Amino acid sequence: MAEVTLPNPDTTLFIIGNGFDLMHGISSSYYNFRDTIGKNNILRFTLESYIRADDIWGDFENNLAYLDREMMLGTVDDRLGDFGVLDEDDDDFSAADFFAAQETAVSPVFILTQDLPQRFRGWIDGLKANGCSKPLKDILNHNSRYINFNYTEFLEINYEIPQENILYIHGDRRNRNVELVLGHGHDTDEVFEEWYHANKNRKEFKPRLRGRKGRYYNNDNPVYLGYFLNDDTNGNWKSQMRYDAINNTVRMIEEYYENSAKKTNDVLVTNQQYFKSLEGIKDIVVIGHSLSVVDYPYFKEIIKYHRNSNGIKWQISWHSPDDIRRITTFLSVMKIPNKNVAIFRT
Image (tube, rainbow, N blue to C red; front, side, top):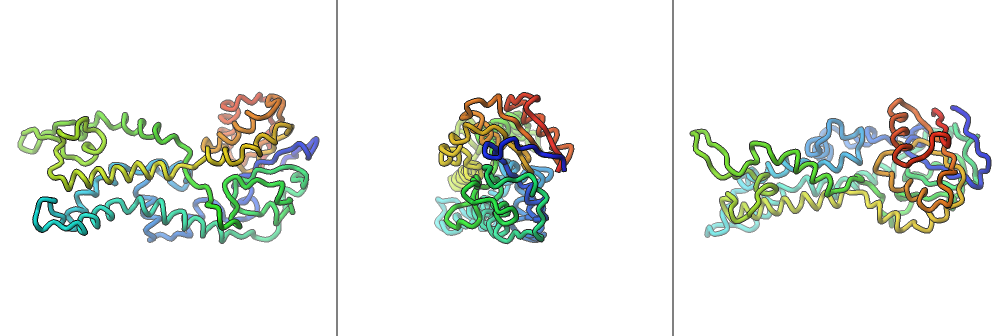
């Protein structure tokens, strides 16, 4: 490992990411999380089937922003048929059957918003260090300050860093009263607009479609009706029951996007005084942090409150070529002068 210089540990801030835990032999990657779920688990099936990503585990939290709207709505008619749901005007209509069909259609949302956090918490609680290796013993200092993006307390266990010097920005697994912060960092409106404009001109989402016999008919595709129809009164809903089912599903999908977002602003508000207290920090050492866009707001907050942000000296770790690219992007976005930056390999 390259040398890290600390002119004054008392004015140094360490920012710790998941690479720190991995460096200490802890199986804390999202691929490890996947493996603990098992191949035939409904949670894993839902994540890998309903999230639009080539490899959801490679950028797990950010990929949670890409629930497949088409796949979700594509099951509505099937579920209504499976439960034999009749139109609400029919004498044999069963509200119980309707709600059962509706609940089944949106079950992936419940799995992702309820089962995922519970399973994730259980996995985090079970993480253990392999031995007591201390590859950073000559770098970490008891008098420095730490922002720990991990949920684990291995900074304290392996290096005896005082707990009062550490901000567990996304939660401390030992605190059972606090929910661990997990989710994507995308602007949900921007994600929707991107999806909408990418799909609005597709043939299957046009108002009129041509049938097998060459006759045109009003589009009855649930995705078209739920997202692209300009006037609900002109929709080919077929029945009030189907109208309700489609619109309820759309509502649940969009609520998922809000619920799966990392509540970064809430975290910033809660810890505002802490970030203000960093105004005199002179050196920042980043270890094992991916510098993902989802965490940019925290770095911006540090810079915003600093009394001389252009004077901060940064030392940033890297492990792979992808890290170098992320560091380059990060420095550009944060407007950090290259002369203030040193990188070191871990």
